[in-house]
Image 1 (cartoon, one colour):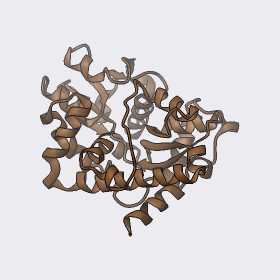
Image 2 (cartoon, rainbow, N blue to C red):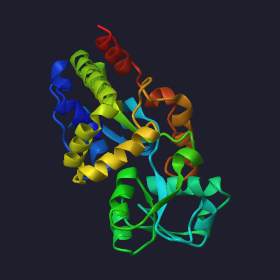
Image 3 (cartoon, rainbow, N blue to C red):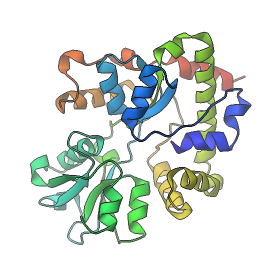
Image 4 (cartoon, rainbow, N blue to C red):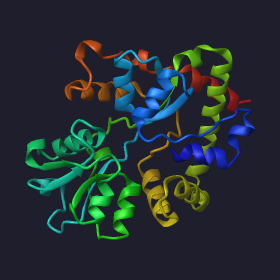
Length: 292
């Protein structure tokens, strides 16, 4: 998550007296396993994964959320201008039942189409822009930074966004191991880390800092600064970073939970309650730190 690297770059973690080591994992599943096992105290994962983990008994809780999902359908097909035009088209996703696939289903439903009206091709979680650049497909579910990558090579337009199709989607959350939350020192460290992230969000949200933020995001992601800056404008437009509250709205999380049950990723009799998924105490402690 670029917000953590901005917090590190700006010295916010050290300012708040917390020693944070940022570590990238190959997949969100790897992050989830590391938090569950206690290998790391906290990490960022997609909300659907966090809910699935909790339903399986993983001792984790969300402490900070990123509500506005950034999924969109981008197309280089001149015949595709609207969501309805996607009928009969081949669309690159991550995998069946995975986040991009679920987002695509919601976007199709918003314009009266069904999953069966398109040919969804699983290409992996991060390969969507690559197959579009290689012209193996003309349409894909993308994030803004992935769209910007493709647009450097091909004329590509936004056909529809998940924020328009499904306003209740919840995208990402910072999860922490419950043992860490229950430990006094662990809780204090998490609160300081969340406070630092909130300071970073304020920094990111200031247009005067866009070049600095783009440089940090480019180093983190391997994108060019141009791509990162273009994506930054899009992320800010959809309100990707929570600027008012913890970003853990009950209605959004319960909505995603229901989607996961309907998709078969969580058994109905195993679905966790909202209060089992979210621990507001860390955000409250972080707010108290910033109010000092």
